[in-house]
Image (tube, rainbow, N blue to C red; front, side, top):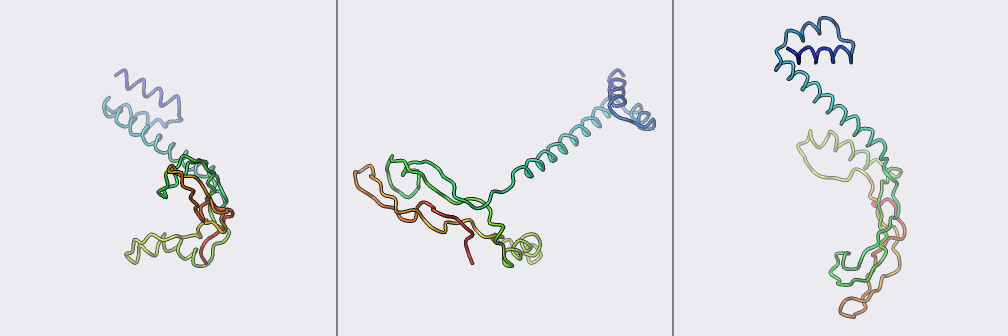
Length: 164
C-alpha cells in the first residue's frame, strides 16, 4: 500500500539500492516491511552509540598521577569527628602507567586471559597505585564539643606510584 511506496521511495532516495533489493521490498507486506526497517534503524542506533562511546573514551585520556584538591568539612572525612570546620583535602588520583614493571604487565595479561583459563576470578591490580608519597603537616581543628583534635597523614603533599 501507501506505506510500502513511501518507505521504498525513502530508501531509494537516501541510498544507492540495487534493483533486486527494491523488488524484494515490494514483495513484503506492510508489517514485514515495518519490522525490517525497525530492525535496521535499531541496528544503526546501536552502532551510532557504540561509535560515540569509542570517541568519548578516546577523548578522556587518563590523567597522570597527581595531587587534586577538594574543599569539605571535617565531618565529611568519615573519621568519626563532628565539626563544621572546613579544610582543603589534597588527595592522589590518576594513572601510574610510566612506572609499570614486569609484575604489572603480567597481571594485566593474566586479567585478560590467564586467570579465566585457570578458573580464577580474583580481583587484582594490574598497575601501580597512585598513592601519597608524602603528607602535609598534621591537621588540627576544633570539634563541635570545643576540643582541639589533630589528624596525622590526612592530606597528600606529593603523589606517585605505590608498591615495589
